[in-house]
Image 1 (cartoon, one colour):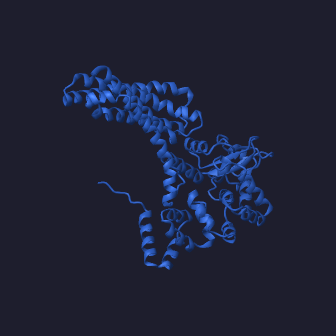
Image 2 (tube, rainbow, N blue to C red):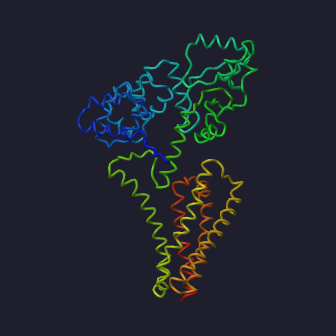
Image 3 (cartoon, rainbow, N blue to C red):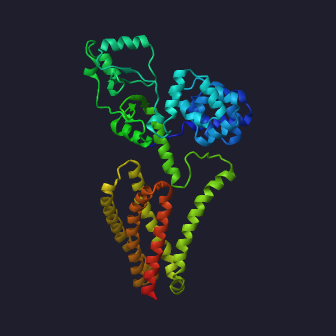
Length: 451
């Protein structure tokens, strides 16, 4: 018995739409402000702009900042543009420093100065430290609210220190152990701290296997480390080994989701931060660029077909069968391309193993080519009654699937080497190659054999 999973947001979104249409704004205000800021952000992104503006006005002002950091870039920019300076300054009050660091670059300069002047010296310096790192780096992901202990103190001293402190930062599962120069040396798990003998030293029970993550490490590297090492919290260190902050799993989940969105949207030439409800003109302008690129590549394929116009006029069956060769090559190449893009994203594909992958994919392409070439050749012979035509399409299909395999491996590697995102441009380049090679092989062989 199968159970269909329903998106939990669907009933909430429907209730919100119904309430907005009926004009019961008090009910909308009550429902909206009972939600977590991330849930409110998700609902705002799911509403057309007119309804979004109405709901945003109903949000409790003290939640504005926490909601803004959860929104995608375009929706956030649109909402910020409609807020005056006083509203923006109020929205930043009470925000966590790591969230504030994400929001500050998008605020007007006058608002930024007011926010900085309203902060204490220590918080201002901590905020500047976080903002000094790129947003997509470990330093940009980290938070500075950490608890450190020295390796030479015993468990009893640490426990008394924690009682005096009275409160731990959210999501704390470890204390970070540093030497007297603030250089990171290991972690002390709270579970270990609570179960060990009070006389034992921190150095005896700490775990030195959790390596520090360099502050300049890319966010994708951080996500990979959390996945492979099953981390919940990780220390962030400076080039000289000093502990500068920590990254928690909730921040890494955001990175993983952004990477997934980027991969899906880039395949269609879109940005993961695009607003699904953006105005028609803006959306059409963005997509027009990629459609133009695709049109240019289509003209190349059309030009190749035009070279064999005389052959097609004599053997009309070539025009009927032409799409089969190009389509099979495109699908086979896309399969290889997808595997390569995923492998590059996960760090599994490197220069050291690229040659092995190339040979493997060529073998797969040739084997599939032989299999399906036989099927298509037999079908062609039965359809058109021509052994020569069946042989031509069979050979062309084998050649195109082999080229598709080579292209699927080499194109993403080449694009990455020249600094172009393979997920963004790979499919267009691959389609052009398989179309051109497929048409050239099929129509070229047809010209030699059938005319």
